[in-house]
Length: 143
Image (cartoon, rainbow, N blue to C red):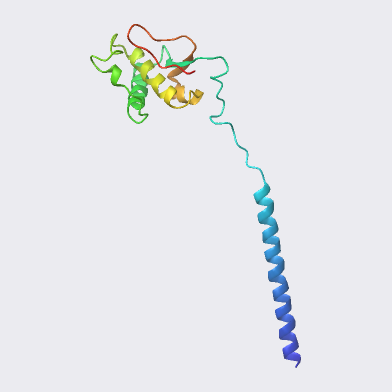
């Protein structure tokens, strides 16, 4: 009989422990689920729409190798449509690295929400409010 009582008391204590542990876990889970997760307005720091129309162009003075790498990335992995920069395209002439990089950077920038980060290109890009379009070469613009 004594053994049976000890066993029952042990089971009751164990059951109480399990119930308390589950309650504590549920409480902890509830506390965690109500903790706010900080979010930033995408993209962080985007101020390009504050003052109207903007374009992204290549920054003068950037080393040619850096400009070329950024241009290659924009037209490759960046998926910018660089067909107007090909020979015979309406933005091929003048055939300068600065112009071609500016056109490619701007296409990428416009396709990716006009965010400041979409005009970085490792420091090779800069945002301007002056339309870089010329002759038959029209740069897309943010509205």
